[in-house]
Length: 204
Image (cartoon, rainbow, N blue to C red; front, top):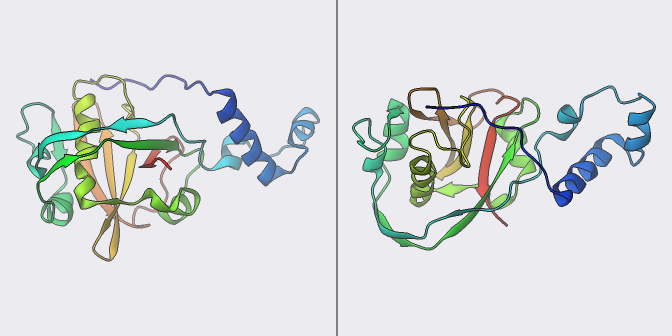
């Protein structure tokens, strides 16, 4: 069902953003350093997070969304739900309806990073609320049979940061070959996420 992600292609604007990020780390003469063989770390190691993706439009939600979507009995998509996710996320989720369309973006990690390091690099509005759980469900639904889309299909992590009460919980979605796995972690509990994992946040 799940397949390897194809190599992404970046626009001129995205490449300019990447170059700017490299210059912040390596200095304004980064091109000269590259030509002279003076750069001792890779581009991916220097960046941390790639430039944001093109906007990903979610919704609008015209019907009623229920957390019952995240059930291993869901007939429309094969799901494996971690018990802790059921206890900490689904137990407090309520039905929502009539939500407007929302623009999201994703950023890929270019080196191992902790949650604190990731949160320091993405906009302050990166946190989702429990009422935003329908957005994760919609992204999964769009790729329920392994279609290409915003979520990674190669077993790597798709990460969403949720504010739940006073805590920040990391919702981890991945496609491992036979279906979608959904779990959650406390902030920095996992340690470091991997080069190639993907982080989602609101756009703007």
